Amino acid sequence: MEGIVAIIVQAVAGMVGGGVAGQVVKTVGMAVLPRLIAGAVGGVAGGSLIGALLGGATDAAAGTTGGMDMGALIGQVLGGAAGGGVLTAIVGQFIGKK
Image 1 (cartoon, rainbow, N blue to C red):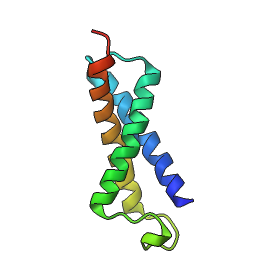
Image 2: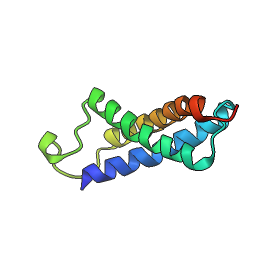
Image 3: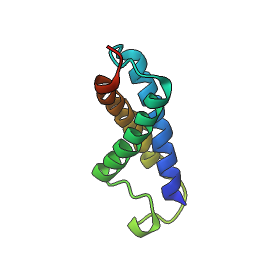
Image 4: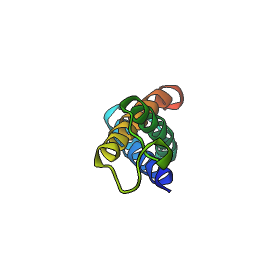
């Protein structure tokens, strides 16, 4: 169950990061829905990558026994937001309005 929570946190953070990237980078002229989808996908990828690099164990097989680890949660949020923003900016360069 904790794995699903991590994915949801990463996806939501990615959507926020994608939305911010779309507003900041004006060349990312995408509609809202593609921006949110790209943000969510990038958020899950970025959050998972940061979690793997920092060694954030999020399931019982990896060593945690329950409860929420605030360090891992913060890493997932930051990684998700960064990944969502980066992927949205990249996708926006290819499908954005010129």
